[in-house]
Length: 183
Length: 442
Image (cartoon, rainbow over all chains, first blue to last red; front, side, top):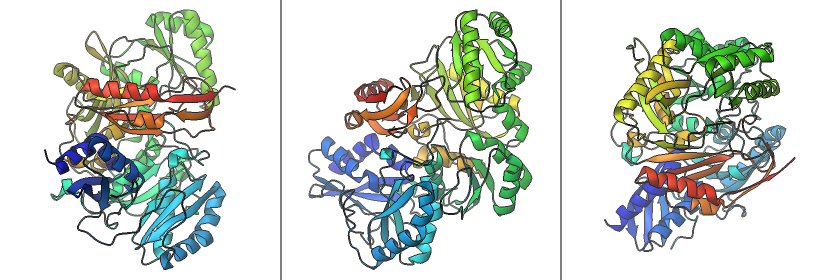
C-alpha cells in the first residue's frame, strides 16, 4: 500500500463519516514532499472546521506525512488561510469590508432578537467565513438561519461571493436559542 | 509543512461538485423542490440540509422555530395550531414534489400538508396511530402481531386500575407514557407498589411536558432478551403483506437495558443476529407498519427477541433519532438523510442495504444525575481513541439536565468504526470512560 492509499485508509477509518455527515467528501490526490493533498468535494465549507483534526489524524497515523493540504476539485482559486480560530480577520479587502457592513447593518440587528451575533472571521477570494455567537452558537436552527437567511442576503449584496463558511464551534455554545432533543 | 488547521481550501460552492466516489450519473441529481418541516429542537436539521445540498434539492423550509431574520424564506408553523399551519404551508410553499418531516414533531403536519397538496405520503390517521403507543398496541393486537401483553389505563383511573393492569400482564411489567419518545416516561415495575409509583411519576412527567390531561398510560409485560432496532423505508403504492419494508439499517443494542429506566446507550451495526432471526424481525416490523396504515417513507422499529421470536416494542414513522444516523453510510457515500429524501421523491437511491462494509456504532451518553451541566472533560482523549470517528456533546454547559425517566435529552453522541464489532464496542466504551461529566446538583 503506497502513502496515498495509506492516507485514504486512515481517512476512511477516522474522519470520513464526519465529513460525509457534513455533506462533503475527501479523496487523496497525492502525497508530495510529505504533504497529503486532499481533494474536497460536496457542500462548500463543510470540511473547514475539521481541517486541524484531519491533519492531526493523518500525521499521527502516518509519520511520513508532515502536513495536509485541502484543495477544491480541478484546482481553482485558493482562499486565504482562515487563520487561528479567534484571531483577527485576514485579508480585510473589499469583500471583507463589504461583508462586515452587511453583517452589521442588516444581519446582526435581526439576529440580536435571538441574543445572537455573527462575526466575520475572514474573507478572501470570494470566500466569507463567519462565526456565530451568543444565541446562534449551538442553536439547532443555526444551519437554517445560515443557509436560508444569512447566505441569501450576503449573496444578494456581494455578487462576488463564492461561498459562505461557518467556522463556529457550535459545541462550545452555552446559550443556544434552540437546543436539540433526542427523538 | 502545512501548519495544523492551515491552508484549507473550500470546494466550488454552487452547485456542489460531485464527489469522486459519485462520478457516475446519479438519480438524485436533478433539482426537485421539497418542503422540509424542521422542528426547532431537532438534531437533524443540519444533516437534512446538507443532504439536500448534496442532492441539489431546492428546499422550502417550514419551522416552529421563529428565525431571527424575519422568517424571510422560512414558513413559520405552530404545532399548537396545525390547521392554520397547514393552511400557511399550502399557501406559501409553492410547487413542491414532496413533503418531508425532519423529525418526529412534524410528522402529522407533514402528512396533513402532503394530503392537501395531493402528494404521495402516509395517511394522516396512520401517522397519528404511529405516534400513540396505545393505538399501536391495539392495532397490532388486531393484526395478530407478536407484542407484549398490555393494558391501557385511563388518565383519571385510580391506583387500583394500575394494580389490576400490572397483575393482568404479569411481573415484571413496564409502565409507559403513550406519547413521549427517547425512553422518556418509561419505567419497569417488579410489583404492584412499584407499578403504582411508576404511574404516578409518569403522570407528573406528562404534566410537566404539558401533554393533554386525558392521556392514558400503557402497562405492558416486560420482555427480556436482546434488543434491536430496524430502520427501513416503505416504498408507497401497493405493498406486499410483509409491508414491503426496505431495510436501511439494523442496529444491535449490546447493552440492552433491563430497567428500571431504559436508556439507549450503544447501538452497533450491522447486526450480528442470525439471518433467519433478522428476516423474521424485518418481516414483523414491515407488518407492524402496514397494520398502522403506513405506506410511505422511513420507519424506525424497536424489537426484542423473546425466545428468539421478535416481539414488537415500538415503531415510529420516521428514521432513527438523535444524531445516530451519522453512524451510517450507504453506497456512494450517501447519508441516511439523502436516502430518505430520495425515497420521498419516489426515486431509487440505489442499493441502500444494511450490510455496511465495516461495523460502526454510536454511543448515546445518558445524563447520570440531575443538576446543572458544568463540564464534559476528557473529550480530546476520548476522540483520540482508535476507531472513534466523532464525538458531539449536544447539551450546552450551563443548562439543567435530568436523567430518565424525566429527561428527554442525551448528553451527546460518540461514533466509532472498526474492522470488527468488538473493536467498535471497545472503542465506544473506552471513549466513554475517558469522559468526565461535571454536573452541579441542585
